[in-house]
Structures are given as C-alpha cells and as structure tokens.
Image (tube, rainbow, N blue to C red; front, side, top):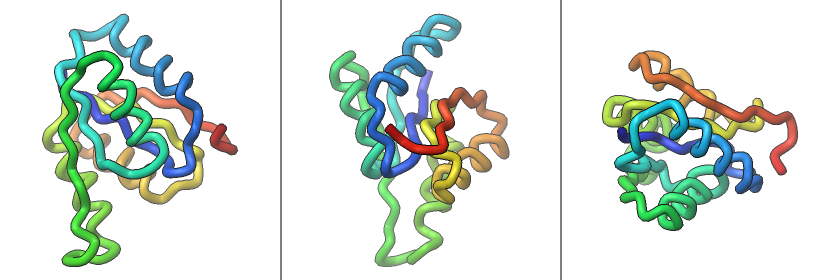
Length: 120
C-alpha cells in the first residue's frame, strides 16, 4: 500500500510518526511505499523511518520556481492521486498540512493523524 507521510515543517516528534506507522500497519496491508513531499519536519521524518524499515520512498517535490505559491497545493494533489492513505502529523496551524488533508479527503483516502497545538 502506498502511504503518504506528511505534516508540519516544524514537527520534531519522531515517536509520534513511528506510532502512526505501527498503528496503520496493525490494521492494513503492508506499506509498499512511503510517499513524501520532501519538506522539513514530518515529511523528512517519514523518509527516515521508511529507510529504517527498508520501505521504498517516492518523492513529489514542488516546483516553486515555476508555479510559485501554487506549487505546494499542486504537489499535494499529485500525491493524493498517487497514494492510497495519508498519515498526517499536523500542528493544527500549518496551511500546507491542511492543504494535504483536503487533497486526501477529495480523493477519498483514509486519513490517520496526530494533531498537536505545539509540535514537539
């Protein structure tokens, strides 16, 4: 199963994302690929944990130079079209994470998350 791990750029809590992965794998088929937007914080933590588990990573990097501020939401749509689920580590504030959540909902992806008012 292709799973997006995304969230706030300031997110630092590795154990929360590790817990999301463990919880997800308990109820779902094996994760075959981690989908990442390549951003600091939750995205890169997800990539690190994927490497630890030997799970391949597919990156969708935004083209900021070409599309400006629209690049992030465009990337989120591409990831939501490609993947089968979203694990979201969100601080409850980040507009980019909210955009990813809305893209996932538009594409009927199951969403699992950890939301905190202050990222740890």
